[in-house]
Image 1: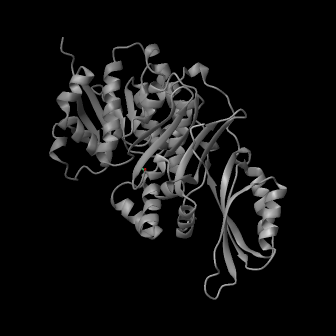
Image 2 (image 1 turned 90 degrees about the vertical axis):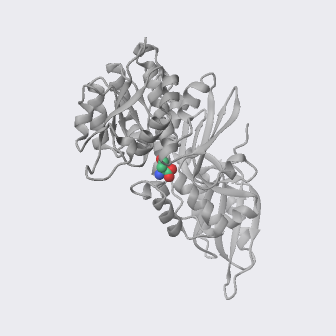
Image 3 (image 1 turned 90 degrees about the horizontal axis):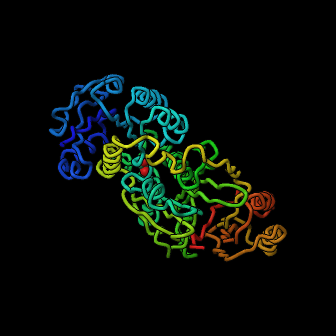
Length: 440
Ligand code: HSE
């Protein structure tokens, strides 16, 4: 028996909404063969009704009222693509209350309100799918939640903000200026509406929150992510890192330790020989270490109309297939059954252990280096490599760059405070964390 098409209502017809309509239309018959039925967009809420739409939007009833979509009895699945927190939360909760399944690309919404949304969905027996919320077109949610279900996941590290990666890549390859590259990312439609979300790491922290929950089976805890942006990274740092054989990437890292879970977003030196160190431009990649499978790497476009639509449509296909299964027998939203989520604490940054790149400006005279190394040595901080440059013309200070071995951040904070107090050291010490990302 031929099943009727699944009826979809879109909230938002911008970059991703337009891409979703295009992909659903172009690949309609392949998608129907996969889903077992057609998937048809019947209504879309748009901000500006007078704006011209492409021919793909023919047959879609347009409205400027998003509540008309979530309340439309004809709609089976609501696709939320408006972004942001409050209105999106209200619309999604209303859609759930109306018994509709939801597909969303909204990482901020899931990271901050996901616990409430999944509880409501669970109670109402509907699915909230969010593949597009993390790393755009890379099916990382599916891979971690289902493909790696046999594993105890030990850690993951991801380049999960394309804009930030684009900026760091351009700084390295072309010596470009930060502001110019950011403007280009905005023009290409990669950056968030508020680009500080990209460069300050908030967007990556949203995505990391979601990845950590499905990797370790813990509730979503966005407020506990340590978040540091890339705005302080200079071309010099990029250049010195290269001299030591490292690249600077803006990583989201989640690691399970005996004491708790590390959740952190910050610029990170990683060895240039790692595959993930060679992920450039707007591309995303996530490296996941499972105890059984070892390290696995997922790579692809993390933003853009059709890559993100690829994830949205995959979720729609999943929802179409689950329409006939019991809610209890569906894949749990956060990978683990909701009543088995763990209360492992999220560690404060002071309790995280990592290696460091340090750059300081110091007077070029005898004994200065001895003072610096003594302060590090007293705290058991071992120096792995060091580089001292000639003073620039007319300068009496020299840049000193060091790589250290792993140490607790608390100890490094103490050491940096003492080093910065040395009369021979000017200004603050630039500290960038360093991870080997080795398979053990
Ligand atoms: N602003 C995000 C990025 C878009 O640059 O990766 C995808 O979430």
